[in-house]
Image: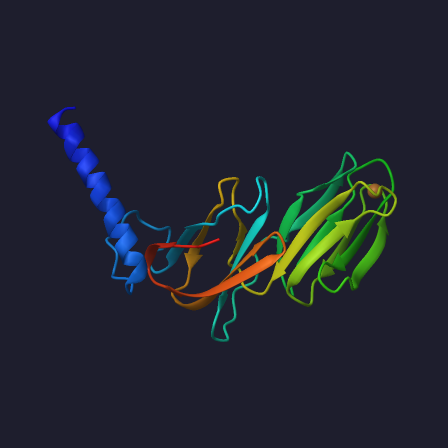
Length: 211
Ligand SMILES: [Cu+2]
């Protein structure tokens, strides 16, 4: 191994030790690693162990204090194309409109119910090229189905907070542009819910998560 190669290896090992230590201590102001899109906000990253391969893990960051967020600039859309709902998982904001479309040459309906309470949100038929706009009144996970084609299904996650995302196939997630402050981070994985407090600061922070 070359001198430079050895040095790189030592530095990499040191970086691992530093990051391991910083998890158990109060976070120190981190050296800027990369420039966030807006330097007054934070980027919250983390990795969640996948309970099963391909499991859907939803991560939601909610402020501890009462805060109002600007409305969405674009209306989220759930379409029906080729006897399939798309996207299979849609994030929407509670209290803001969502558009449901039918781009198929066949009649569909959209039947939405709360996954926890089983309470129906709405059930409407949507003809070809038609659309229906609905505003979710409560945060939650919603199941989307079409009674005419029982194989069609999708999920909607409605949150008041704009900071919600889904982890990738490795369990990695990233929430950009987070206003600094005290938050509660909730991880939904295969029917389980874990919650922890997070103090978001400017720059990039990595959350250590346990199974
Ligand atoms: Cu259908």
